[in-house]
Amino acid sequence: MSIEHYAFGMITIDGQTCRSDVIIWPEGVDDSWWRVEGHSLCREDLEPVFAHGPEVLVIGTGAHGAMQVPPEVVRHMVGRCGEVHVERTAKAVALYNELSGGGRRVVAALHLTC
Image (cartoon, rainbow, N blue to C red; front, side, top):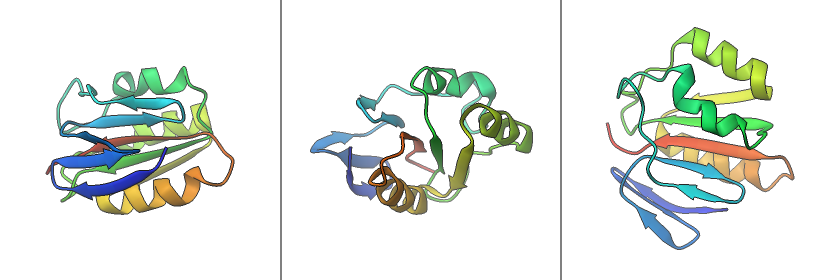
């Protein structure tokens, strides 16, 4: 999977344009991702990710970084997949594209707006 374009509220992945938050798996895109608490990430929000056995998880916190990722959630995710990156979405997109070409199972969970 390759992210071709990201702008506030919109992302294009392998020719598919999405206008809602997404989880990108090596096998496809879930464009119906939403969090229990909206702008705060919790463990439950990412449970579907771990069924795909990621080695790397990239989290995009929004264009302005409005989605909070508590440290305890990051620690939990590191324990489940090893490597976790939390960045504003534009930087997370670039990082995802860089890492996903390296042969590891990379998953991205991206908040597209604020």
